[in-house]
Image (cartoon, rainbow, N blue to C red; front, side, top):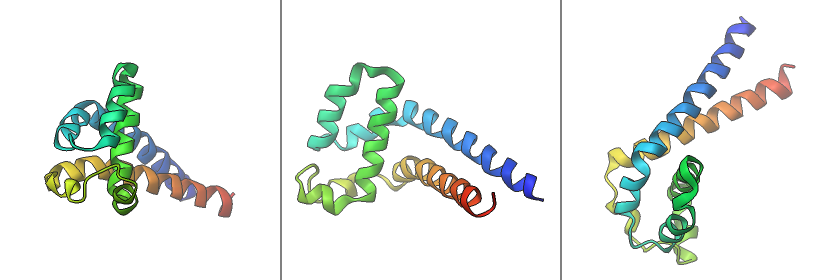
Amino acid sequence: MLAIVVISIFFLGVVSTFWIILSSYRFTELLESYLDKSKFVASNRKVLFHAGLVGLLIRNCAMALMFLIPRICEKRGLIEKDELLNLPIHLKRKLLVPWMISGFTLFAASIYRFFVL
């Protein structure tokens, strides 16, 4: 039974990693086009544009972080007040769900590591 839990956590981690890579490759530019007034997105695009897939992953992660802590980004002037509301809900889900699943997998693996082993 314990082996099934370990294998499923590992499998979920691998699947979420590939899902993040695929969604970063397919949706980063589309998401950035909706957030074109953001200083944060513009500066990340300018710096990381030529970094390839790693740059896409970093830019995608930065946008996901913007959605997770919008008030802090607004206070610091990184995004406009209602700019995140312009993004369609299906794109928000495509951005956030892979990162949430990856975070859940990391949490489950750490719980297993510290409390079961």
